[in-house]
Image (cartoon, rainbow, N blue to C red; front, side, top):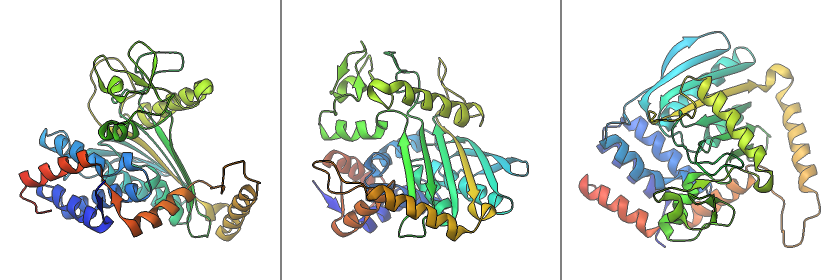
Length: 347
């Protein structure tokens, strides 16, 4: 499989989006976000999204220069409109606003509507953690992107609706929870599909509700569906996804899942909590570090070499991929090369 150095892949992505009308700062933000997702091992939210974004721009659905507009401010909260811009740009700016609000009080909450795919939402909560705050974020697809069957159902009714929580530790990396409420994000299904591989068992069902490991059944017509997180306890993942749709969709005004067509875009709720308002930051960090050490001290099960706390695996993968480069599926690389030829970009 072809392997590209992270700086080369990032610069190529910047150039593509600049040629398509994105201001350099927007293009750089998106490129950094995508490549950082690849470095962290979340290839489902990495450069695999470049062809998707290019298509949305060419269709006029994604506005590459779209910027965040604050529509209402109310003390500890704000509402913003993304003006159909890159989700990575709008999500970053929304979390920066939530952090600013929290630092002047204790908690800042920002609702986002009318922006495109926000990518790996752990990026935004990690921003808060690196600033010494606790960050929370949850995202829906504005009522679109229905890919997940409800627990006990056979048809798509919810999006993958992810949630992330991050906290500062004072150590080399913050603890970061970043998970979808479905058994896997759609992007991971897409990576298997593009690689021509079968899916892990228990991820998807076909249009008749039968378990399947064939990604073609998921993307085919009639389409299959992802299952909620939890397997036999999938009612928990389903309930979590449902409530995220309430907070990221109904509360933000972006829209929750419903029958009929919807406007593509994400709804997002970004929350920052200033730890310093509740006590010394060092005390909080020590407590989190003590918790991590206690958890990691557990004897390991057979076949397990090491216990990881949330965010640790991503840190290890990032160091490895910075050294070794980022593997890009040949089919994806061909798509990117085709885009580059059309834009007269040398690879």
